[in-house]
Amino acid sequence: MSSISEASITDVSWKDYYHLCKPRVVAVLLLTALVGMCLADSRLPNPLQLFVALLGIGLCASSAAAFNHVLDRRFDVMMARTRHRPLPTGHLRPSQAIAFACIIGVIGFLVLFEWVNPLTAYLTLASLLGYAVIYTAFLKRATPQNITIGGLAGAMPPLLGWVAVTGEIEPNSLLLVLIIFAWTPPHFWALAIHKRKEYALAGVPMLPVTHGVAFTRLQILLYTLLLILTTALPFVTGMSGIVYLLGVAALNLRMLMFALQLYNEDESIPIKMFWYSIRYIMWLFALLLVDHYLSW
Ligand code: HEM
Ligand SMILES: CC(C)=CCC/C(C)=C/CC/C(C)=C/COP(=O)(O)OP(=O)(O)O
Image (cartoon, rainbow, N blue to C red):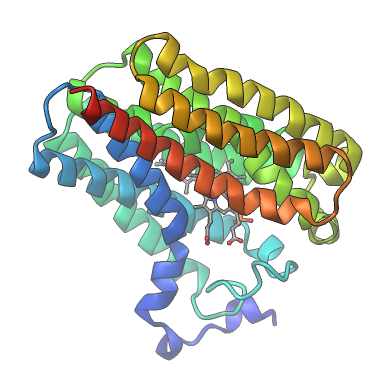
């Protein structure tokens, strides 16, 4: 019998359910949704509206993360980075994780539908299914381009926040989606290079496994250039001002240096670039926010 089916209900703690939610990833997703809400309107968002929208989006993103744990449990048990998770360790049974994911997903959807607006609820549901079903159940196992397509689900929260305020999809909100969409490949492929042996052992067709490290380094460099162009768009369209432009230029300079160092085959760079990518996206959205209220 595998360790997955040996879960004893007495071992279950709230921490296991907490880890199912990928809380640190969801926290950053919520930061991007918050910024989307703030940039959508020149007035300050209503605190109650803000709380309810973030609650609904957060519950749905956590539900997507929990489904990812269920669907990936056989891969996760094979990789050092993931084998301590609640399902591979047997702390939770798949049925418990599925029930949890369904409950918080339904609550999140209803919160958005009833107290925010139906469009936000449907777009959030589409993101949930995009990550849990399209990315995790299909693309991740099928193609090394899994994250370029699947990355769209993770890029959606600024749009979700924006639509929660305005009730409609406006062009500037799509710029924020585009930024996260272009950022995802450098974010993930840097880690995938570092962990390529684990992905190969688990049989997951990530780009460095299927096309080699040199090709992945080139792709990271190209996506970094695309990211730099994309991050200029909020200034070009007039949504953001000079504070954003100067701040993002500094962030981009560091990102480009990482991509060039990586391209020049420095083995210590991938994991450093991965952690930098997380600081990068947090600072970028913080800058958008600061710039928005400075030019108020
Ligand atoms: C398809 C798209 C994405 C893929 C494949 C991906 C992949 C990953 C992986 C494999 C990790 C390591 C997790 C771990 O070691 O436990 C990670 C960490 C992280 N990712 Fe992503 N990611 C994606 C999109 C995003 C997005 C959209 C955000 C937020 C805007 C994000 C934020 C983070 C953060 C904050 C961490 C660090 C988590 C921690 O410290 O535990 N990721 N990502
Ligand atoms: C409703 C909504 C906004 C949904 C988006 C949900 C979400 C949690 C997106 C984050 C993307 C992410 C962490 C991908 C990594 O999955 P992985 O399986 O490649 O990574 P792993 O090996 O660490 O599990």
